Image (cartoon, rainbow over all chains, first blue to last red; front, side):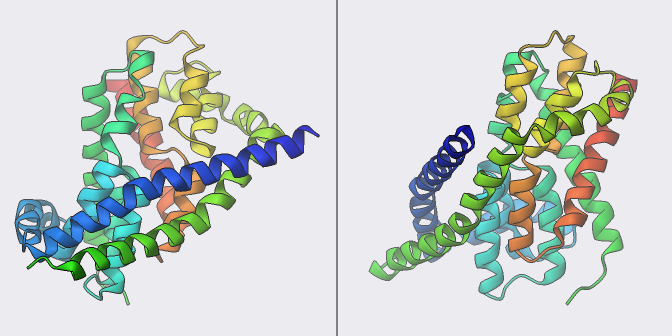
Length: 147
Length: 139
């Protein structure tokens, strides 16, 4: 009996989470298209060029990186899939962006959550970013070309 | 220039991404709930108790790490608030959890975008443990 309740609860929570996502995803995608049509994406690309150059990845990785780092892995992945569909992103960039985002995403939410246990949030944030950068840089050196 | 087409495109893309993520999110929620229900997480976490000293953490922190890895950081927090941790221990476990959490759900996402999920997840676990061990030595 409790198993059935658990399952119903899980499905309910899953549907609520999808609805939560819908509330963010439509405005986000519209804002992205507006920014694209206003030619604002070049600014973002330039802003992110130190990171994309250091990781030797396609400059169109900038948008999924920013979305993932700020809003989380699910939304970052959603934008990433769209960039791949558009045919802009090569496989190598996709893998390296995935590595960076897997280690470092939703930086505000995932950091503030540890406030109640008295963690040093600045250390948590910085160490996580450095770790992601380090792992991604090493991966970038080892991963030459992928198809 | 912005036209009605800009908004149409945004809506269509929003819908695509929602379908893509929605299709994987529901099964993830069910699997994770069943895993919590099964009590398997407690059993797994017992295997990790010996490794906690590397991170400078008490053995019971293993359960917080495993529940964080399987479910998410909020679930781990629920376990952590009941524990007594020093500031150093709190920072270390927060770093480890911030790098490696919600591994089931996030692994499925990685797989969906066409990247080897086991490679990425392995990388996260190794990175989280390494960074935690280093912090235990330097903090």
